[in-house]
Length: 298
Image 1 (tube, one colour):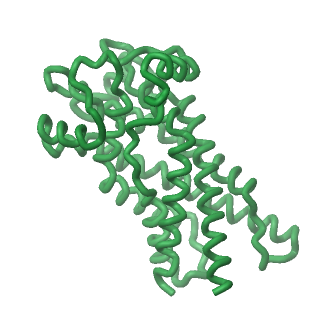
Image 2: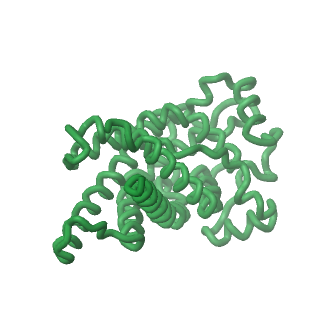
Image 3: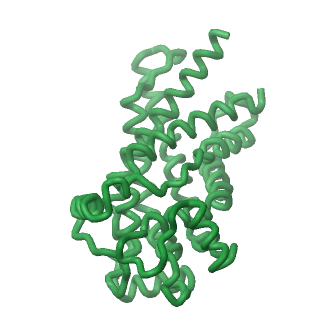
């Protein structure tokens, strides 16, 4: 039975991730632009708030800018997370402790970080492109990759890797909270229904679980996202990166912007990621339900 559900989890995660991107990507663009704007000399436009940013980008850069330049990537997290949980469990009926859920999520997050950091770097740079850029803009994902390798070398693709590894805690916090809240809700509803053999959770439950677990993760880890985004900016016209390393970002942000600097763009982030997390888990759980029903019929 080992490995039985790996491809189902990978497929469910990919479908959930695609649905999330399609619905929430405009807010991702806005969040990234807020994160990197440190209020000093910058080739980025300034926005008063999230609605103003949405309106300004749609008006001056074309509405399609809110949706373009997102290199699609299947959601590997669910695949790695499912595999890690199975290794930690003695058999598929065992319930994992919160500590093991945390370890499984951390392991999955670290693997995803190493695999996807180049993708996130390219995505961040494409999202930051605007009419104020002094250098030639990237025409797309392939051109960005080619230009980065030519001008900065392959190591540039791993700028921001250390904050990315620290961001493993984001997924760990979210999935641990989700699993524990889910366990509590299943037990609570099963006791009330007096029938533990029936699937008691529905899409409303998954919406609440996905959204609430995401809020907890965002509040704890958002400053690390800001550090990563600032590190992954395109270098200045002289080819020198705006920030040398993570410590440089933290020092300058704290000095010139204070605590608020580490939470720039959090409104857009919450508006994007809390509903997105709800969508992701609703789709994920319901796709798995379909697979289970199909298996039973077979």
